[in-house]
Image 1 (spheres, rainbow, N blue to C red):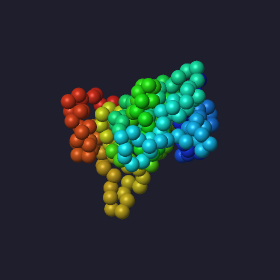
Image 2: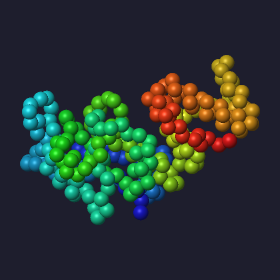
Image 3: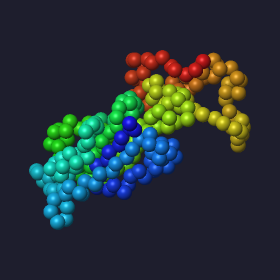
Image 4: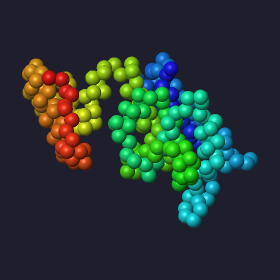
Length: 238
């Protein structure tokens, strides 16, 4: 059975979007994963299919109604329920270990919020996992859903050409990835580090490890603090 992605959204035409191209698009065409974008508006109320209402307690904006969202979840849930993920700036940061967990399961159901968000009661009722892709605010959850799906799909068996691509990249061992170089060996007066031209695999692995550590230490001190307190054996090939 293919890995399944179910999207609850007011804008189903936004999918597959960029996921219909490149490796993800090819995998979609080959049946490695499947996509169903479910229109929340189909469960709206009244002649105008309303999906939102004013917030209790006052304040700007509108809130997506729990009864509408609940009906959409019920309609989109099949015999094999998928974990419900809600994309929101209020969620905990999405991390690579989350992506690996979702990719190893049957798939995900993604709820894309709009307006001021979704009534908290329906999130609690369905034990939705609330996730954020960064400390900024988007117009809706759809771009965040595309980001999460892309991160998962590339880990599905057969999607990437080389298994090493997933084991040597950023966050795979708690560090940022080392820098990359290709031909020409010298470009605009800038030379490739000599060690990469040496053919000495152990020296190259040591250089890459040092570069990864230095980049993490300087660019992501939060990651470095975690790595330093719980070091992970570096998986780079010797």
